[in-house]
Length: 123
Length: 145
Image (cartoon, rainbow over all chains, first blue to last red; front, side):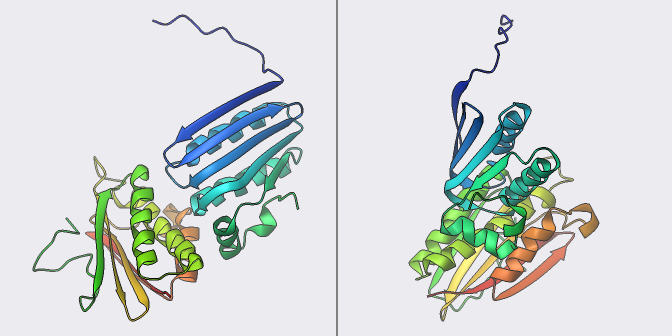
């Protein structure tokens, strides 16, 4: 039986890199901003790790949660649904979520699903 | 299973008068979706699909495979097989995604699937859904080149 891990307070700057299948997630708290950068492919197999990072960021006290989609090469309706749900939670809370746009494939999926208006892009 | 039936009815057949064909399959689990998606996109690229067409095909096949993973074997003790079959004829790619599962649950029991199927309907030039209690077959056609 392992010893209990001592609980530590959230450091002001902590970076995590998680890799799962075709997706890498970099999650970093820097001052008042929690940044989550996604690289690779977001689908049913990789959505949970993104959801976990969003949940972790939302539980913190960052004034802004920035999700950078620019490194994503693929997203499908599973990934888009996850982002739309996060956006809805953000609107109901304190509008902390900000999205940075993805490349052509990501923008194409957003265009086809007509979800642009439901996603809080920075620009 | 669906991709290996010979001689009789196959849940997965595409048109036979073709020069190029793809057949691939995997377990109906989330981790298998990306590999099959890549196989279809690579096949489409070899057939001359543009970047935009490859993006759209990737999205459509991913939605169809996700539906299989989430619904086809929901009542089965272990996930069964999902298969993709594709052929290129006269500037169009015909793609079939099929399974040997119990069919799709009624729409009210699968609210998350609505967006996926709607996306396929938007992307594909033609969509045919054959949903039975012995398996589901989604047949899509895309113009390429």
